Amino acid sequence: MKQVEPHVFLLARPAINDEGLAAYLRAVGATGWGTDAPSGAEKLVEVAGRSCYRSFEPGLNPNVTRIREGSKTYLENILNVKHGSVIEHASWTFAFFNVSRVFTHELVRHRAGTAISQESLRFVRLTEVGMWVPPEIRDNPEALAIFEEAVAKTEEAQQRLAEVLGIEGRPFHEKKVLTSAMRRVAPDGVATTIIWTANARTLRWVIEARTEPGAEVEIRMVFGKVADIMKKEAPHLFGDFTPIPLPDGTCQWKPEHSKV
Image (cartoon, rainbow, N blue to C red; front, side):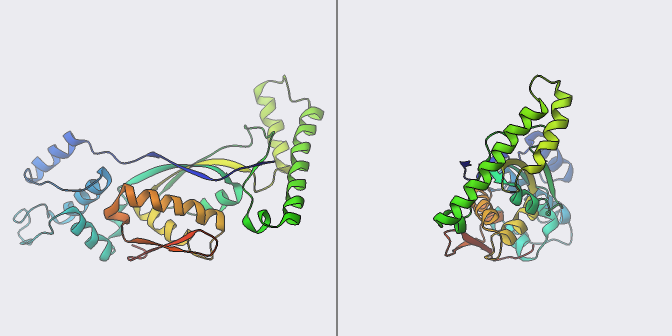
């Protein structure tokens, strides 16, 4: 058994098409508008929000005589009034590496506002079985020995099945069928990879829900890392999250504005 730790990699973030934005602002009559937004994501969300009321500057909409100046002030109000649909325009893509299928089964329950691509054990044959070991087992020598023995038997079963089924040297389409059959003895804890894209509204909710004390510890670890990334990526959209240390070394990330 290979003991592993879950890793989070940020793969993609929103980027502004400056030419297209400038053309839109000319069309709407807001050529003088600018923002101090610290990221493309926050700039995009601000543009989307201001478009709803033509609130780029006073006078574009006769009903608007005052506007909120500055990205931070504007986006704080968006969160405060829970205008959540506006923040859905900004999305980020993560690679969650060496997470378990326990984790991915929990993650895919969050469907709205996401895109998901998972490593397929129908195609990827298991040899050495990577595992993140929960602290309840890792810190108990007797329990860890039982755990490691069970995983070793799984690894042995994969190797013996490959030999008995004669998988080596077969065409790929036959290997796929056999690999699919062999994976049925793989445990839910096997390490895997999932690529996950989510918009800001979904990210805020999943961070809040999956770092609560009652959440499974592995998913709490991973979304603690996501929260840390997002506070740096988009401080005006995620700056209201505060980490609250928990006894197991993870944190609950609690927002000032819940369920935006």
